[in-house]
Image: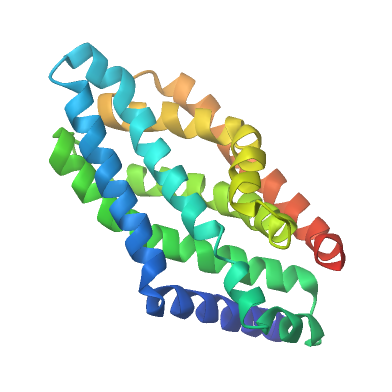
Length: 226
């Protein structure tokens, strides 16, 4: 168990440090998010009804699109410098490699989100009314499912032509249950609503995250062999 935690910790730390040092990953995600928020801010205007309908979806569209930019580079940088062969030759379970990649991407995307959320609040004037903890929880749950599925698909498409196009084409339809759930929960955090209805979305979100994480972990070894 100690060796399992140590291996995952090393892999996670490696990916986080690579993403931080290679500033183009962070800058591309940050600038994309900033420009997208500015465009949406001008397009919505001051219509309160339109504001309530679009805001929960906008923030997750920005997160998912920025996340794809990060996911597409998760395996490419390993392939370009030849590190992927070294990782595959190490005496460890391939599932540990998946967990390290997934957790590293989750941490990095969470760091990016911590900068995007204040910009979002600044541009749109959203009043959270003290619901910061709930917002942080739904952000993590949504990001966890996204990175679990995205890491699997990024490994699947890393060596294919047109991988930048294939990844979002495969990822977004499969992310539908996750996306619908987090949008409804985010709307509850921003504007309130019926707790019973939100609880059902929480159950769907958590079930999706667990299912995707388990399936991705078990199938990752076969993806790498191919």
